[in-house]
Image (cartoon, rainbow, N blue to C red; front, side, top):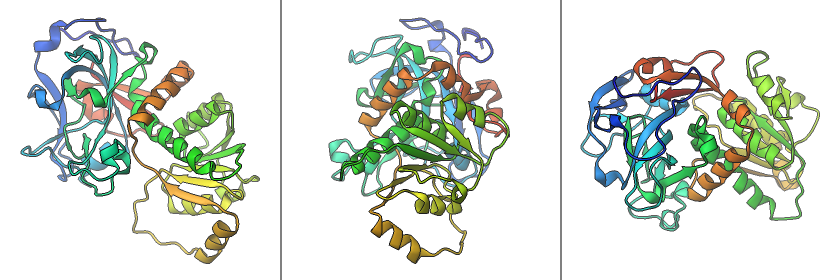
Length: 375
């Protein structure tokens, strides 16, 4: 399509630092689904311009990360279109560049990501104090997931409250902010729980070396901890990505590890791994569950022994999902401090919007696939 700058392989195209580019008046392309209708994914070439009610800040999309949530929505497992609409725009791992911001919060040309979850309208006690990640009544909304249009469209709008400005160095990898916010919250809560007593953790076990696991390991290394990452893969990019962090990679069952971690960040959702991780933690250990199990599978397990261990060793197991504004800001700081080459190596493929279906077709060695709106 005319007016769209081309990018070199593996790199987002450079866009003007300020002002509106010629493509503003071009039709909006959007990747959409009919919620709960399996395999209804399509690219709509003439999607409406984002409504002013969505937010004062107008943003041009640069890229959108693809994750398992998108694939589950495409499969029809869940998803909810905005009120009065039949289709849902996908995309919650956003990276864009500001076109207009009449509020002065950001400047034209700034990199920006949109916070995914918005508070419920009641609001519940947590949403009332901007802790929408801890919503108690489930009436929150989420871009690209539940009742809010996603970011997989050429232009989108965002309210200043939900716009996170990014360091320019993050132009190639800023779509990693959303998954990083999830682990920034996990670490925030781990550290809050740790302050219940004298606590000086040294060893961390991360189970799962997908994007969440690798980013959890990154934030652990930034804390100066001894980091171990466990995954089933023995080939492909995962082992080297872990070693490049200065962490230790394991491809053995949790029970065969020869150490007891002070902290476990569980990122697989696999029931056996979850239970083994809970049993493996050191005394006063903290286990954070970020992976979501699919359910429907039963395994034999000595629940009494687990209860005894948790009680007598003062261990804590808790779940964590989503993130509030504070965690998004922490995530932006963590990414800006990280080795940018390492972050770029997490991105397995950058797929042009015109070939959108390829982005939502998993490859065997994929870590993070990105839908590129600049190509």
